[in-house]
Image (cartoon, rainbow, N blue to C red; front, top):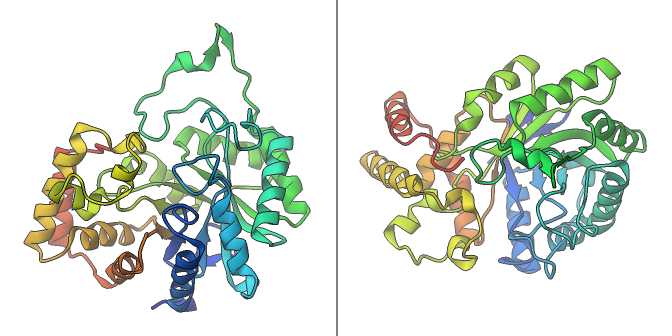
Length: 355
């Protein structure tokens, strides 16, 4: 499917990744190690060299499954040519009520960053990670379904929260790079202000520069186009898109059957990003549009993300081999201008219902 000439450069680094990255957040919960190995081996055979992990995976995060994904990846990596693979992981930040991870990280200070990376390397049985993400910002920002900034969240009992500075975070990451444990650093679930501050401070203080951003991007969440894509272009940054199928909504299965099998029904109350009234309206319109062009909604939704100029690699996950094969096959489907224009028309009517 992919060969090395298809790989894309990540920002200003020498890293080159396949246009599709295999997502692993179901490994260790919805997928057993045996099932995970089957997916990983198949992806590798298709020329996929990029694999996305996080210390808190699988999701939804629970104490009894925490870290299972990295352990599975470590077991799989044992007999692989590590230098040919791009392994990414992410450090969980504060403010998410996950006290089973490092006692509930209070901040992204040097102690927490070091502990997170060292533990991840141990679980994955590797000496280094190629891409290390800060999974979400240390500071107060709207995340995972929140849709507006709340200044009062800057305070606890009327006392202003003292966030770990971006400079301090970068210095901690720099030490890990110098130790050879991390090749490149990146941000996830970040906003334009944060990206520009990381870039500004890195340049002023001669600290490591982030090379890519990983944010949600799909037919029902295109907020990155409102400010972040200009930064990607002008600062020569990569972009990894996650949730291109909107947690399964953009397969259309929940429109056809509200009780359809999937994590939305398996884990009620999880993924509040998609529990909004506009989601079903938008998905129904996109489903009709896909049918008009004799495509499945899955094919149209993935092809749309694959076709974006700013997307370096799209993170695609699955809970079955059939899903994975269907998702990868969508890469060969190009969308013409007429369907892209109609997609934009639907977007303008139901703009970003799942921010």
